[in-house]
Length: 448
Image (cartoon, rainbow, N blue to C red; front, side):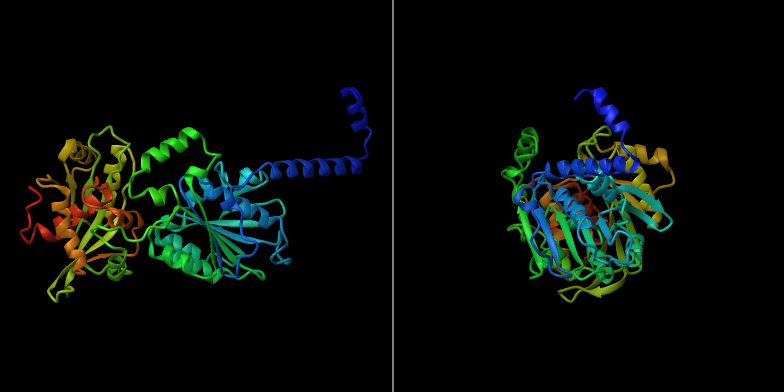
């Protein structure tokens, strides 16, 4: 049949015949696209997930955790209606570290919903941001970073399925689980799916011990769809380190032998809210040079409580509190702006920055942006172990507390072993507590 013959036949179709042909072609294209995806074994969901239970994908870098959850949600939408009274039959939620992460990773990204179902559209209304299907099914997008995020989740409505993306990276994970559970009540089998690189957070450990949480686990080495060059890079980066099991093999690490902080200690001393403070500092461990964006810049906000409270030894003293972690990889100007914003938001007394190894640039940038900031420098006169030991001792005496959850800082604390290069969040935490509690008490052996 020639092209001309085909055009003539199509032109001769009635409107009903043309609609039927279009419907069949769409269905055929959908089937071809759907069947083109080849899952890894760990991306295959269990046959049944218990009501209010979880399917939790633990995986190393590049193992397609997001991809597996996006596929599951699209399949859920195209399955039986959880509530036939609802348009589309489904009301779902996606909770990510931030709402922007939910948009970029879970909807628009190369492993997101739209890759599996291009019909998905993103809509932002007065009621929030939604991923929507043509049949009316929808998934509302939430973050779990700020108190406002949790308030939105608290009032987020009822759902039949909740996808928790990068579970271990969610700042307010405990609250996110609590409030999403309250709304997980549509249909006969409401449940969770979760995707994460495992990190030794209390909530993750508790999930893995639950009988209604079904786990699958993927290794970077087995992720054959990931380009070989990328796999080689990741293997080279982590092989031989203490993070190899977590970052490559998706294994949930317990406390590491030799680490100066323990998960149990952080949980025992954790507080839900900050008490009145007598002093607050923003501590910075900047990259070595002003042009270096490859290294993480540590920015930690910490405070000294007003009240005198006995520590574990019975000594009455003021306690220290970790208030916020604003660290990350960013241009120098952004690091300075972020520290200045935190300085004003927390009504801090000073920004304190380490200036060893060429870090003097940070003071110049800060003073150019806001000359009113009280800025001072510290120089490391002793090694990292010497600086960290007295701060670790305060933790062991229950005189230090994390307010809420600071997962990235906590991970660095419980995984760092003396002798390894100390990460920047940990360094900034040490500088903050030294400034607030050790230097005023005369312990200046590690700083000048």
